[in-house]
Image 1 (tube, helix red, strand yellow):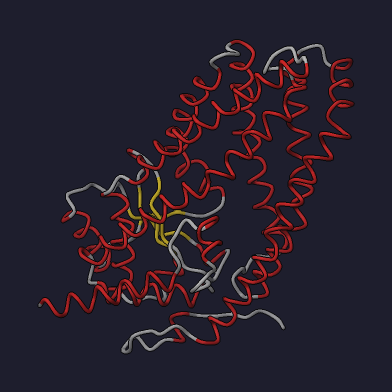
Image 2: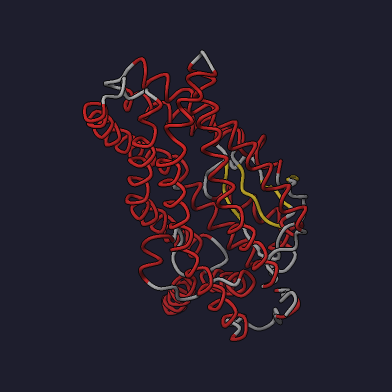
Length: 392
């Protein structure tokens, strides 16, 4: 079929309000159905890999490491590194298929080489950060076997805060180019809106999303001096000034509501509970199977399965919280941006351009969605716009 390209700016008349495009929504629903069919395959591959590792690789690898490497730290890094590498190899064909379908639907503009380079960058960053966390985790497992979960909860908080501060300046630039948004009439409106909110946004940045995708996006990132609102060039080049300001107002709402900090605190509490549950299971496994302690590499599968299951079971809680914060940021945009109508128009264009499923199944929203469904957000904004017009 070839690429199904789309240009939001060329397909809409800005003198008229945008509408959900029937053809685009048919493609969005077809793409969503494809992605839903991949969910059990994805979960099955992960579970199958873990079971095969546990049954066929785990014990032989530990015996080999025990006879080959005298020190525990290199044994730990080799074991966890091979486990992680195996997981990546098993998952890579599915990720490649997702990339190819994104190209088919016109959402990705990357070549295979560009896509694979990004994959490698992600693996390197993940290996470095993951390696640091694994070393810290096993230090506490071995030196504080009764309270390791508490220390790791505190480490997670510290690690997340540091990462949130450094990611916009050290990690994100590995994948995208960020430049301060140039001074013009639009930037003056954006800065005025931030000033009216009584808050100091450290910067408004433009990023070259068009080098990777046709989709449009904007987001809030960073803490302290690295705090910034980022606007994709695919948004800036194809949306009206009022629509861009309304999207900015939504991101500003996250900033005003301190959503990054609140999310960090909630995630820390959830992870602390997860570590505590894992600690209980690890104590049982040590007594049941005679491991040397929770820091014994032979107990690694029990640690992984307990943390993974807890993360899976609690992800709907975190997603529900995230959807609530998105609704709050939407309402902020209604009241403090150019108006709810402009925000509804921006959401409509985004839904068309990004091939977002307008009405996903409720179970999928409950389990996996960090944002409310597109159609619900558009309808809510339009209803608020009607109520605004009536009160004037």
